Image 1 (cartoon, rainbow, N blue to C red):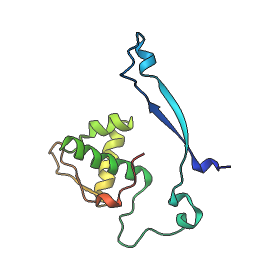
Image 2 (cartoon, one colour):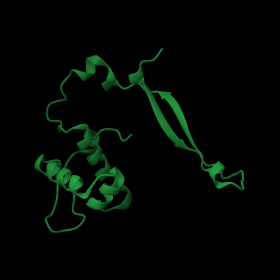
Image 3 (tube, rainbow, N blue to C red):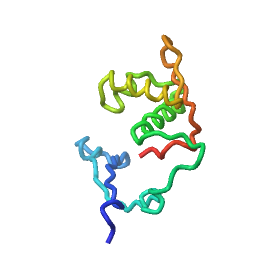
Length: 132
């Protein structure tokens, strides 16, 4: 039997375009699926180890913001605005602004004051956590 740490619930949206349906809610129904996830970081031996020397250190929440900045920049070919992060993370504007300031002070991003969409990621993509 799997422990609760190894079980992850994933919300999957399934749309079946090949079968026309009168009711749009039937085509776009959400399904909750349970799958087993095994992460090396979840194992006690790995969790107690320090990150490799020279690797940037950031919290889990900071990592989520960094991954969002990286993914947004790759998809849209421009940096996200703080309003984009506010909508994605569903937080207030001051919360996003404080996180941007924190990431900049930590040397993880760089911003140009007074210039919109000027966030530059200073962390290698390989050092970022996996987007979930």
